[in-house]
Length: 326
Image 1 (cartoon, rainbow, N blue to C red):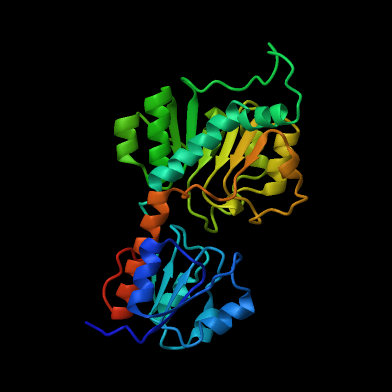
Image 2 (cartoon, rainbow, N blue to C red; image 1 turned 180 degrees about the vertical axis):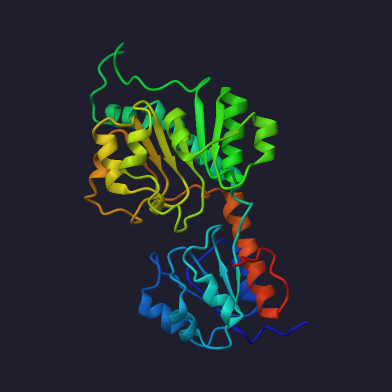
């Protein structure tokens, strides 16, 4: 087994102890302790001479960063399921292995997607603000009326692990009809959820709830724009727990403001975080959470364990537990 105790590693943020303690015990690790990501110039300085890096989605891992690290860089361990922050082709060309942390956050993220869905549909956050602002005087027969869930249609964009987990909740708990849009059919969803694979336009037109679970890539970037929102029902609820760049934020704002769709629940934005004066944040029918879908004890600890496994395996020259392929 390759000796790694003298190898240098930079961890761009403090992650849960379930993984961080193992990293610190195994090699020469430096951890960025700041509440915000390291500035770009600092990051380029810190990775110099490192054999491994633990990154988050907040770090752009491109050719310049790999050059700054040097030719001894063996592994990049991304503390996330997605890896659109990393130039995979460039890492592959240099023989640098890249790992991510899938699976362990599937159920937590599906829970968050449904929490946003039901909260937006039933105007829960709007009602909370109404109470806190002192406006609640009596029971109002015409007040705070939201959308029903039972027997409605859920449209899943990206029927992967998380999309399937949300669809399973909607089908089993609320007897929803399941539509999905994906490049590949999902036989398990077809068989167990009576799901139907449809084109994007059909999904938009027929769904009462649209939830995004696809990867961010050239095909999905900005796919939810003014045209997409115009094709949705005026009673529809839009949910995005994937990546903020999949929706056009200005177009979403306009659709919500003008009543072209009923409400939205977002765990991701573009940019992230949004500017404090972003008009989307002032809309009563839009819930914005600070990218917390994976924020449970078991999910974040599981992510840390996988990140540590990937990093240490890469340093030793072993197979990564969860390797990203180009």
